[in-house]
Image (cartoon, rainbow, N blue to C red; front, side, top):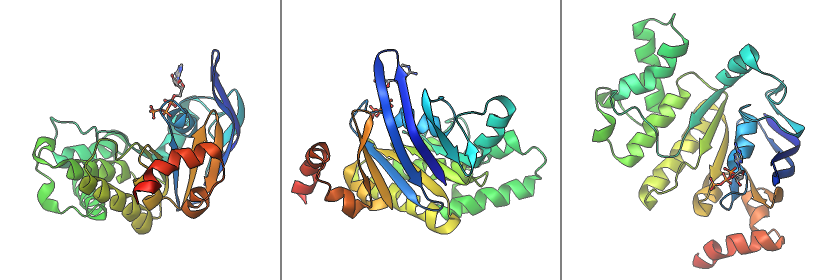
Length: 246
Ligand SMILES: Nc1ncnc2c1ncn2[C@@H]1O[C@H](COP(=O)(O)OP(=O)(O)OP(=O)(O)O)[C@@H](O)[C@H]1O
């Protein structure tokens, strides 16, 4: 579970987060929506302990990410898998090498056949078969690259997966396939997910709960249905363009 309590963060005179409260229950998907520069990434960086709050705190599975550092923080980071915008695979490595990379890096004691079995198991979660193992990222479609990136994020069995704008810049079909892969990771592995998104359609599809950030505050938070019917003026405006198209 992720718990953010009264989180404040400024950079000089730029007051980015002004009292954020939210809770992500275990095994659910929480989407953070908001305009450019609204503080979505800053919020996520607090969750993983890359930034420390000016006030308030963030805890993940009972660990206070805002107060730990050094070895403790490195240890705590093993709870997380991250999927960045643009998939960010290593182009000079095969799919197998990409997905096994975090294991080779962190779990040096694992035997080669255990590593392979783990890689195959995670590729299966994202609906990819063993035949992709020897392929190069450049040979894969955008959607497949995203799936490989998620398999890599899942290979260490993280309890929490953070997605930073997973669908930005993708065509509708690839977006759909990324949405179902986020659902698959939740359904098949029970991971807790936090997704930063610009993409309203995708956000409403994958979220159990979502929050809309505006002016340092959460302007609306709840189930997709609750947020859709929020009477906050910013939220109504933010969502209106998309829902008018429906
Ligand atoms: N390390 C930093 N130092 C100074 N300012 C920062 C730092 N990180 C973020 N900011 C500022 O905080 C604000 C929020 O940035 P953030 O990246 O969280 O926005 P965002 O909602 O993720 O936007 P986008 O959707 O465009 O990625 C911006 O004004 C940004 O310039």
